[in-house]
Amino acid sequence: MKSVLIANRGEIALRIVRACHEEGLEAVAVYSAADRTASYVRAADRAIAIGPAPAAQSYLVIDRLIEAAAAGGADAVHPGYGFLAERAPFAEAVERAGLTWIGPPPSAIRAMGDKTEARRRMAAAGVPIVPGANAPVADANAALALARQLGLPVMVKAAAGGGGKGMRVVRTEAELAGALAAAASEAGKAFGDPAVYLEKFIVTPRHVEIQILADGTRTVHLGERECSVQRRHQKLVEEAPSVALTPALRAAMGAAAVAAGQAVGYRGAGTCEFLLGADGAFHFLEMNTRIQVEHPVTELTYGIDLVREQLRIARGLPMRVAEGALEPRGWAIECRITSEDPANGFLPSTGRIEYLRVPSGPGVRWDSAVDVGDEITLYYDSLLAKLIVWAPNRPQAIERMARALEELILVGVATNQGFHRRLFADPAFKAGAIDIQFLDRRTDLLEPAADPRLERDFLIAAALAEQEARHTRRPAVGDGTAEASAAWARQARLDALR
Ligand code: MV4
Image (cartoon, rainbow, N blue to C red; front, side, top):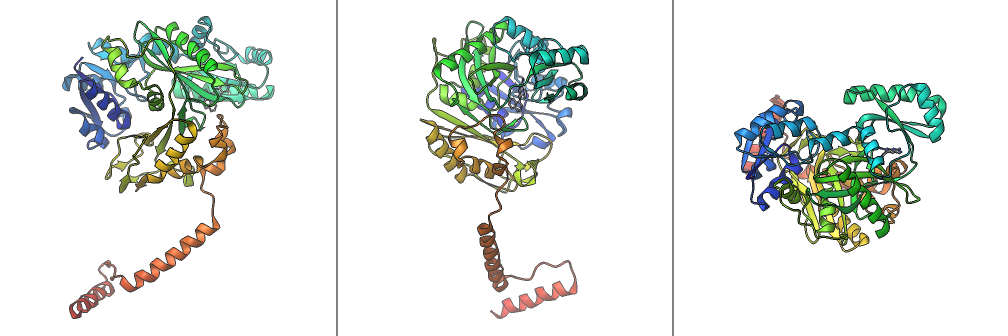
């Protein structure tokens, strides 16, 4: 392997460029028309245009990417996350073209992509799954019988699903038929497969995931990431370790994740998602067969570069992970800085980045590919940057993140920075009292509180600024009307007399 095509964009593309260069590999970027001048493109050794801005015509076109690998002289493909990363047909097309796929075997992607198949394989491997069915619902009567057996509330889930689409909570028997139909219809539209199945609904769990790494000889786990702070299935903050895990629970969940990987012949970096109940019981949810957005918090607590290890494993080299049980060191937290406006219902905002001051200093990492001058559009997801900190313990990591969030200045596009600032000052968050419903209860953190004192200060500042401006302002450039021209002429005479 000498040269890697990066079939992705943005911060993860830049992250992979950096890993390639440290491994002594060349990096080939691909870019859509919207990303022609992006910093990840400039950081790569070569760059190949793959089409217009919409991802469906560029980053999602398998043939274009295979052609780009040939054009750029790449002999391997790294998919990053999102886009084609978990599409078995893409992995197969890469291998058919004689290129090295930097990811798990297509068979492992397929096994984990089908949720009922994954449940059957996990149950057989002794991985605790959520109580429920391991095959799609046949009809409404069978579903009712199963719901009674499991006990309400239950959840209807898409067999081909993941990430929250095609899911319904059912709290009463009367709701079941409607939920089945709604979930099936949504699943059909989203995944092209209307099959759904039932699970017991776990109330107020934490979302804890385990990172694994497998090199064909060994499969190891690298502890957990706590991802409970999320809104509508979008994670906003991730940390490692989790306050909810003891070393014994970490070992048990780690062993389950390793067994899950081994059951599907996994290779490379992967993540098992679990629901962790308040009682310490954990249930396998699904496996993400890719590098994840939040991988840096594991890198910082385990001292392992996951992307470099992915590259090594794909080259047939052993991973550089010590034998025996590994332990996390210190505490790492990541904030996802997105171009979403909390004051506007978290809708994606657009604009040009006018000014950017990047936080730095002790224990601070900034994974981003946005620069001053970049245009933020609606073509791609809203992640602008990942702000990651490391400190010896959780209280210090929180202090460090609060400090880094004060340093960050990003002007030109609305972001969720204010939300993060409020979160890192919040007593409940500081106490680690989080679960997947945390932000449903704490809508006060999502929107800035209207502060009457602040409003008064703003009004005074605006009045002072206006007063100052009246003494110094020059006539505005007019629209060509006589009045505006006269004002300029008057000003010119005034200037000449001074
Ligand atoms: C669940 C659940 C409760 N009980 N399954 C959401 C996305 C998909 N990966 C699975 N999800 C859930 N499955 C049972 N049986 C609650 C969720 C869930 C969730 C899980 C992880 C992180 C955030 C979440 C937010 C809402 C619901």
